[in-house]
Image 1 (cartoon, rainbow, N blue to C red):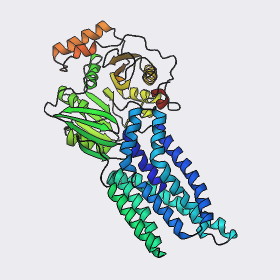
Image 2: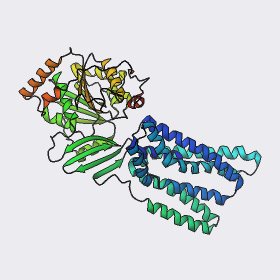
Image 3: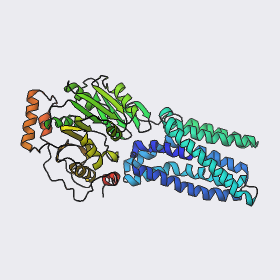
Image 4: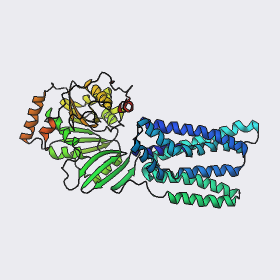
Length: 484
């Protein structure tokens, strides 16, 4: 029960604080602290009231504390997000507010049960061992069932209600067995009230037309007039104009076409990260001779891209649902262009940002091939450390690296930054602008404002002395994404 709640808890918190190591550290820490207090309190209460009635009331209280969590989460976590105490404190405060009390009550059950089942001092070891073995076995089953089946099948709110309802039902059946009719009647009323007050999905907002919890994300699709947006957890991922599908909504997708400056003879491309499929769909439209492979971790994201963002179904566009690095390790394919679009603001899959991974990318490029990576970060200032570390890692593999900030040289502001890496000789600004003009003039590239995008090439100094090269052994992405 408890570990199933912990697995589900990560999906409750993720839309507000992401799915970082800070979130998981906070969840584990809060659950363990609450369990410690629960064990202590449960033992003392059991010594004072060593009867089944108070024990079952405690079980009932535990279930009633679980049921309201999804309903109150939207208010508590939104308030914490609005104040913003920092990535560590936000996660710790949110997890404490939502899960500490239920975990204390659930933790008190085990020592209480040991006391009730123990008849002699000599038998306490056997009783404790048996009950804790059964409890651990139940936790294993609950964890696997919740993670593998329930979250994608039922959604977070339904699972939490189910966990609370099971806990309350067991308590009420026990009270009925003991013929504590008054307690049964009162507990039943309270249980029904608790379930009725918390019935319904978590509110996602009036513009949401689709919402689903998957084993990786909470996916929501928002619609505002003719514009449709994809969000994974709390991160905006894709934007699309339903009435004008080729109109750019998020400008960074146009910047990915800057890769053609360094190799315009593209026949085969790989996208790692799909989102709504806006970028690969545009490449498919603009370059009719291009074969595109897309690797996306979450199959539900692929379904959403096809249903809500008109991702084409064609033999020229093949989508694989797998981890990007694992797929690269298994495929023999080599590409003219690899686009890496799998990073978020403060939660990145670190294994897709290490020196070893970039080296693996390089082995899948044809001679003259290009890698374009979309990074959300800052060029300078206290929030620039993650980008500068990724840049340092990228340049340790690719000898020629170009940086295109989508919002220009915005001092210290978070923005999309496109990095282009290649093994070809380095081009200067004048050569880049000339090639961009030739691509526009010849009609090879039809992106509006292509020359203006190319003109944002960053020629300033990027300080990399105080940031590490990210490796499989050491990649403190969450630490680097937080201001020092």
